Length: 94
Image (cartoon, rainbow, N blue to C red; front, side, top):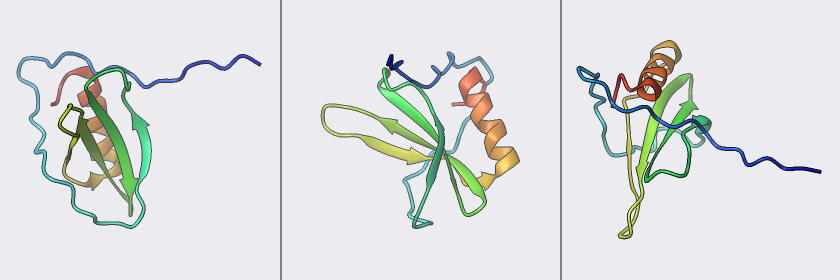
């Protein structure tokens, strides 16, 4: 059996005039959060599209020798959160 290495997409370079995401410290709003998608683990900053309680948000983890720094976007309705996720991947938000 051949096992392929699986990874998420890379985030495109941020474009001029991009949307600025209001990143904040994580707040435990739900007991369980499902990661629906994530970016490639090969980079220092990893993004995850998370869903819980009918809402979605993006979790950003910046890895460093001194420890990881985690922040979250605002929690949004699915349609708006998915649009923000696609914009982030395409370089239209950061």
